[in-house]
Length: 276
Image 1 (tube, rainbow, N blue to C red):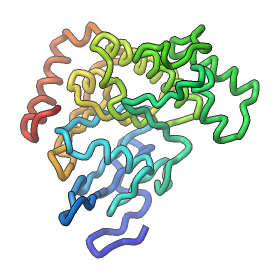
Image 2: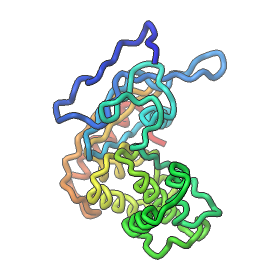
Image 3: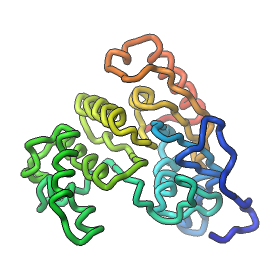
Image 4: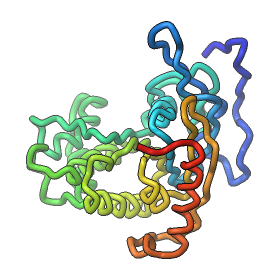
């Protein structure tokens, strides 16, 4: 990517947080979009690091650039300045070790659950082998869908459909999961169950997760760190380590420590603008 006059050169490795070599580094990223005569500045000098196996949640007002940042991290769009590094390499296009999970499941309605999970393998390899099917079945069992492989998307609940997407992403071999409000369309009880499911899979497979959410409680319950973004142009204005022990349980949400942490995040949010 060519540097412009207002960009600084970014070389690997960028400054470390001191915790250990990060899996993901976002260094000085900025982004504007041209809509009409005036460019819209979506992001202004965003920098962050994510350690291997860490869960980091992004919170911020609507329009703060959270989803834009996630797409830049994943190589779906290019920043105007700054760089993203994944596993020591600059990100310039989607990386095979990154997996996306959005609020919309985008399941193919004419394919069964199993065939939807196998779709990336079919696209990548041009064929599906017996071992691929075996792995897909194992992952469906892992996400709690053993015995549902023959169903079609129309026969699934919202939570079940997101489990299919999660299995599909895990089959793809993703080391970093980029999640954009994945449970935002679910009812409260199903969302709670999916949070527990995500934590269980994280514990079993040690995935690294960068997740956008509008729920303060969800962010504190899931994350090792919560990052708060400002109103547009978005930048990170607060970082809150979450010192709750793991494995986490729903009972923790009624505890004093959880309440203290959510109040801290709420105060940060109150300073930068309301969530949706």
